[in-house]
Amino acid sequence: MKKYLGILLAFFFFGFVVLAYVAVGTNYYRHRRPPDQPIAFSHKIHAGKVGLQCLFCHETADKSEFAGVPPVEKCMSCHYNVATDRPEIQKLARYWNRREVMEWNRVHRIPARKYVYFTHERHIKAKVDCVNCHGEVRYMEKIRQVRSLQMGWCVSCHRAKKAPTDCLTCHK
Image 1: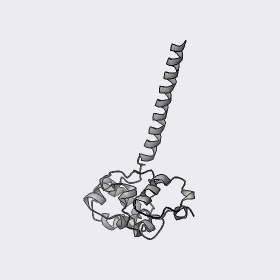
Image 2 (image 1 turned 90 degrees about the horizontal axis):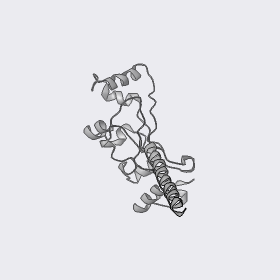
Image 3 (image 1 turned 135 degrees about the horizontal axis):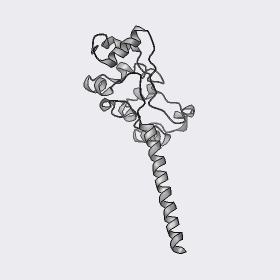
Image 4 (image 1 turned 45 degrees about the horizontal axis):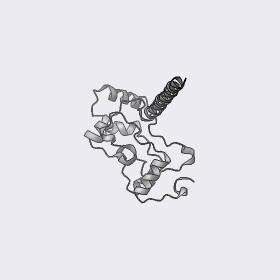
């Protein structure tokens, strides 16, 4: 009887471990999997090969809460003449010609956003490099979230940079 109880307990223990592993892995994958976008935009080409700075495209990041995504006009300021034979640039040009707004899918999400006040502007003024939160986008073909952006992660960064950790810094 003890033998069967031991086997049963071992079975439940390993079942729990496998279930926990799958649950954590699924959650990890869900947050790290890059969403599909209307245009296959490559940060690897634009930020890496070409060397564009983040603020070139994300113009509002140093002035507002959100970094935002560039309007089609910004893309077309270069792609009116550059790589016009490529299918993704032709797709971009169709948005431009139809005067349509391109609806990008959000990549970076702050958990419990309604309880947190975050602004890109404040972080840029404090000379926090975009890489700290967004990772090395210049090596990413498809942009993805690489940091959890959870409170513990943010607080540890604030501590490391000797930034304020008072609750009212982020919770208004």
